Structure formats: structure tokens, C-alpha cells
Length: 289
Ligand SMILES: NC(=O)c1ccc[n+]([C@@H]2O[C@H](COP(=O)([O-])OP(=O)(O)OC[C@H]3O[C@@H](n4cnc5c(N)ncnc54)[C@H](OP(=O)(O)O)[C@@H]3O)[C@@H](O)[C@H]2O)c1
Image (cartoon, rainbow, N blue to C red):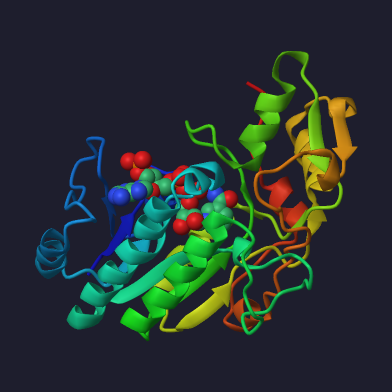
């Protein structure tokens, strides 16, 4: 029995692949490009091919990381965002449900509006962005198609981009490169998690039996400015060039949620070891390049 994980070439997918290699997990990446040996290649948009792949592989679980995760790309193409973030996962979930395969789907803290943190799983979502709305639609569609599915809401992720210019650590590196200045929000709080910690939790959850919504995040929250200072100190970067700004100072095409602290009591009760944001930063191996 093995785990199939989609989005394996993405930011989080690369951390999942690293944990798979480190821990010797029996898992196969499900890719649309690249040449990883043994990878599953069925196009996720092709329901018949997906079904054949699941029947052939009979995985113990499918961990669905593939998504349109870029907020700007979702705003530019709301229908496409809905297709990739809601309709596609719902079809995949339905196929898994029919074949009795565990399905773990990924969502985001961006389903909340940021006015009533900390947010528990039972709190009412009210996404402010096209991305957040498409991910909320995905949560509902997946749980309707596969009532035993697990939908994991993650916060802002940081950590080495593993070759991709993604994640909060890489963003900071880019901003400070060549003597630049980083401007980070003092009024935007996140329960930011190291991508490696998220990956470890997801592999554990792929083997578990819990279902429904689950918040997997740091046990507390920091502002983006506080997070930036902590990441810079850890990476030996010049923190004097990190400036604290307010959301209101930066025009934004869509409103930005202010405080998305997640209540993680359900995850802790399930036995997941979740760090504080600063503990996660301490595990960041990031060094300037
Ligand atoms: N990063 C964060 O801070 C964060 C926070 C909260 C939640 N999440 C959630 O975590 C999940 C992973 O995010 P991420 O940051 O790893 O995103 P990412 O770096 O943008 O990776 C997304 C992956 O999805 C793949 N993909 C997109 N559309 C596809 C399609 N139609 N068929 C097959 N593959 C497709 C991409 O494939 P290619 O490589 O081939 O383009 C890419 O590998 C998403 O569900 C996201 O919403 C992320």
C-alpha cells in the first residue's frame, strides 16, 4: 500500500517528497511534468485516466496538494481558479470515495476574513479573495463528494523553496538581496508554519482515520514583520533593512485578511506535534545565498 501525492513539484510537494525520502515512506509523486522515476502521470483533469490510475495503484491514500495557489493568478482567472481548486479536487475525491481510498485535501487560512481570530474549525468561513473563495468551494465540494475525507487548512508556510521562489523565507531573501529593503506588515498576523513541519503532519494524517476540517498550523501567531525579523536573524540576514508597515499603506486589488491565527486544539488532541512560530523558525536551515 502506498501514498500518492499530487502537486509534488510545488513548494509543499517538494517538502513532502523530502520527508518521504528522509523517513522511507512508501509514496509515489503524481506529476504533470518532470521525469521522476515511477511517478504517476495520469492528467488530473481526465476523470477516466484518474480512475484507471487509482484502480491500478490502489493507494492507501491520496494527498492532494496540486492547486492554483497564487492569489494573483486566481484573481486574474476566477473560473480557472474554481476549476482547479474546487471542481478538480471534487472529482478526485469522488473517485477515491468510490474505491474506498482515503483522501486528504489541502485548504488555507485564507477562507477566513481575519476579523475574529483565533479561528476554530467550527467558525464560519468568509473569504475575502478569489483564491480564498475557490479554496472554500473546494472544501465544501470535497466533503460532499467524500464525506470521510480530511480537509487540512494550512497557514502561511515558510522554509527553503527547494529550488522554487516560493514561501515566506524565499520572499524575504529576494527582498533583501542586493541591498534591498523588505517592507512587512505589522498588522497582518499568521500562525505561520515551516513547510517541513506541514509535510510531516500531512504524512501522519494520510495514515490516520480522522475526517472533516482540521487546522494544522503553529500553536501561536506572529505578525509578518515579527516573522520576517525572526527569519532574518535565523538566516544571518541584515534585519535593519526590514521595515514595519501597515496594510493600509499598500494598495491591494483584493482586501487582505488581518489576523488569521488558527486554533489548533483539534490537531493537538489528535497527537500532532505543532511548534510555535518561533520554534518553527529555529528549524529553518535557511542561509543567505
Ligand atoms: N504555500 C503556502 O503558504 C500555502 C498556505 C496554505 C495552503 N496552501 C495549500 O497547499 C497546497 C500546496 O501549495 P503550494 O504552495 O505547494 O503550491 P505551488 O507551489 O503553487 O504548487 C502547486 C502544484 O500544483 C500543481 N498543479 C496545479 N494545477 C495542476 C493541474 N491542473 N494538474 C496537475 N498539477 C497541478 C503544480 O504543478 P506544476 O509544478 O506542474 O506547475 C504545482 O506543482 C495548495 O492546496 C495550497 O492552496 C499553501
